[in-house]
Image (cartoon, rainbow, N blue to C red; front, side, top):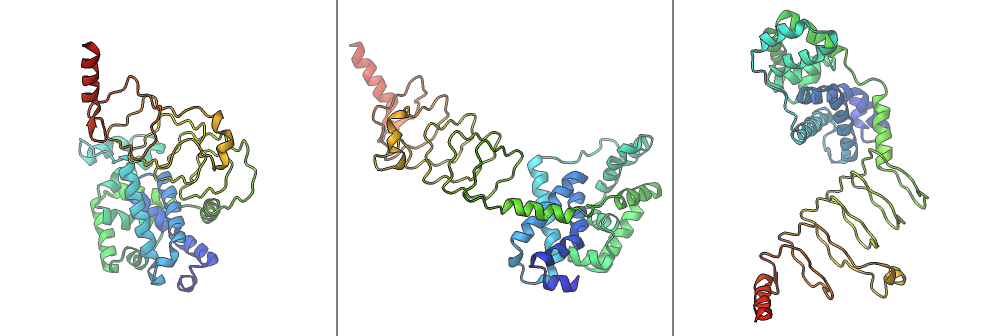
Length: 330
């Protein structure tokens, strides 16, 4: 691995890094999440993040601990977001073990995770790296930034805590898990997709499903009548965009900023279609606490809306309506 770390920032070098540490990141992620499928997804995401930020690591000899740290942080983030905490058994662990021993083989992974979850995280991570990843005590120590004796101690404590039968099942089950030879290709395939450049490409009627478009840039794009459904667009930025006839429904826009919005001005490229557009419509919108400033509100209609606390240039709309109604009733 030493030669690879010297050239790891190149694409070919990073491929070697992936092959060397793929099971390590998989193991670290699994030790946090307890789910083989999620762990593999997180391991892939960790390598992608590392590849994008590879130039920020000053000491390439620490690439192992750096990668495992990224995988662990991503796993913890995912665990928090999913609020997916592993259930703590109401009955003692050993009682649960006896019940599950009688169940079918397909439930072995659940039993293994229950056993591992009884261990402290630092011990669990060392155990999973050793058995799932097949790494030596020295390699694990390097990745976890601790001493070899500390790793050896953790493995001994894990073996002492688990029953003999459970120890054998944990070892066997973890050894059967690995990311496979296709993992490195999957990582670079995803990297290619994320950094793809579409220039002067006709995408009419194209359909993107289950796509990650984070940090993508769309420039000079013709997207008339495009449809975005079930999209996470948090933090997205629109600038110099023609949104005529835009429809937004069931959207959460807390913290959103609208500036220089309206019908196209006379010198705008879309000004020729100005008369075609209907006035803007806000219907059943929660604008509580919002601020409108330096806006052209000529001809604006507000109907059947809650105006408590609403002010115009510091004047209470409620008070104005109250005075108006009193004058009208006289």
